Image 1 (cartoon, rainbow, N blue to C red):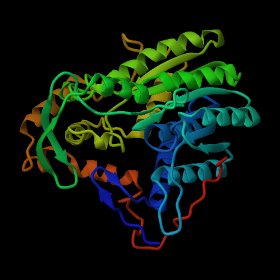
Image 2: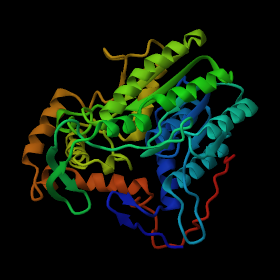
Image 3: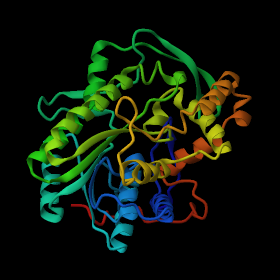
Length: 396
């Protein structure tokens, strides 16, 4: 079939298998170009199909020569209907890994469930014995609690008062004001249930109890802080409360791993175009200005550059893992540099529909957005027939 982008708001309803494969190959080539990492050898990535999770899996495999198991929840293709981008990403990654002689298998299902946790443990026992790195990179809007059966839905809302600020429709370039009403206590609790650290801790408890964590095993989850501009709706809003919980959970897990000489960390990453971030008002405008500034300074990174730097210079640098005063790894350090933030803040004050094409990088934002779904890669004929029915080679 011929697949074209069909966009509804911040979601693209179609994805292109050839473009998704190109995206994966580009990331693999970047990791290879940076040289070998003396890193993990047997890796579990929970949330492995897109964004930071996919980049972590690619970095583990093609940077450290690791065997990888990926857990994700993606939609396979049906006749005449493309699969989700994460499905095609995983298919491409596992094909490339297996061609390179690397072990790569995956499990598709609800990572919050007991069933998928158990299935993953059985696969580790059967094929790898033990794992030395667990990446937790789930980004889901809802969670069915595996014990209570309650369905929790996360929300993006400020706490205490209405939030008003600029935003941009990244498709049209129109800058407008957005208004978001404050949350309830129930909203906070639900968002923490979905995006906090409880499920991460459940995973680590189950893996440890099953004896599949190697001595010295490390686990890492991902977080974001961001600038003062986005603070009311992000870090001091409902999602920020969930991130606080996630970061506190790292210390709980770290304590539980002491008898294995293991460690748990949260890595605070840079603002990037992801399916999740595209849905957050204010963030697209902030990112388009941030990209302009960071690209001009030669500091810009995408997911794969961030993860390669995390692995090579933080997690597996041959010495102690550097952390901030709250015990977090920081690879948002270039984004949060004083000079970068000062320039972004100045541009923010100037940002209008008319000025944004000159002062921001909305074209870069849009390109990254469409790349997530396999579109707008140079050298691909998007008018050509493609086979949508792509299989994931290592799917268990």
